[in-house]
Length: 88
Image (cartoon, rainbow, N blue to C red; front, side, top):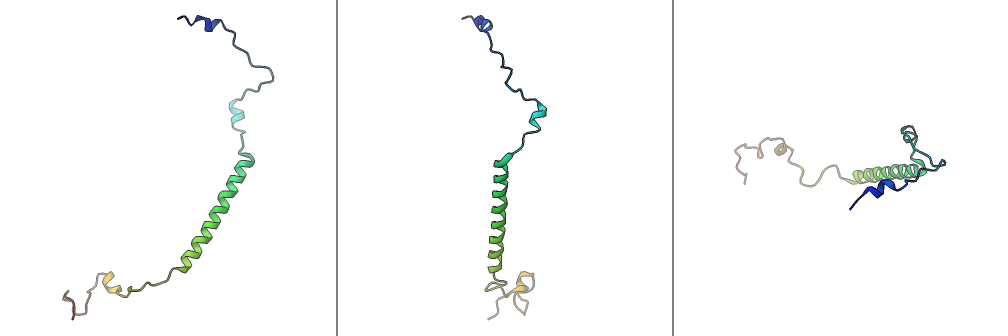
């Protein structure tokens, strides 16, 4: 099969009114209204998430039940005798 007929077909030339973009035009492309709406949506979502996290952290108690053995957490002896055996 010969592909030479593709070379003989006239390729349409662009009309004079068609705009050809260059690299300079690409640097002038702006996000527009949709970009502004998306940015504002993200900003409002972030503010709401920060407020929600702040209220959740305020509800957390300072100390939880059973959190009295500070000496055991620091690596000190668990009982006053220091033998390691449980006192009865």
